[in-house]
Length: 101
Image 1 (tube, rainbow, N blue to C red):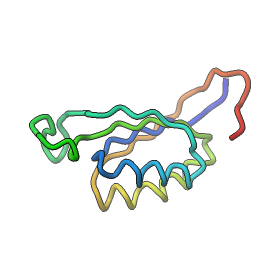
Image 2: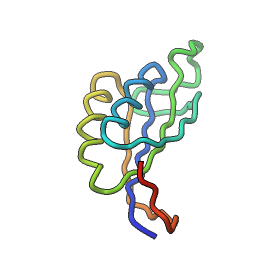
Image 3: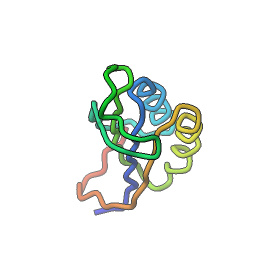
Image 4: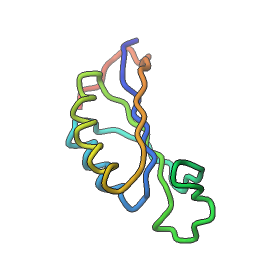
């Protein structure tokens, strides 16, 4: 096992391309996306929105601890400009062989 950072981003689906580009530029090349996420946050509920373009996405990615600073530097301006939230937690990867991208 080895330590990794878990990055969770909830944002408007319209900004998905910008966010994925920012992750890629930061050295984070793998991710998972869950579409049509609804909930209640600081801006209220998103469950009553009828427009597909306004649906939220949940992005989860993992990176080595040393890549976290570039991720934050690249993601923060997007979230500040377009909205959304990002959470980072410490976790462990159990794979015994580390993949090199």
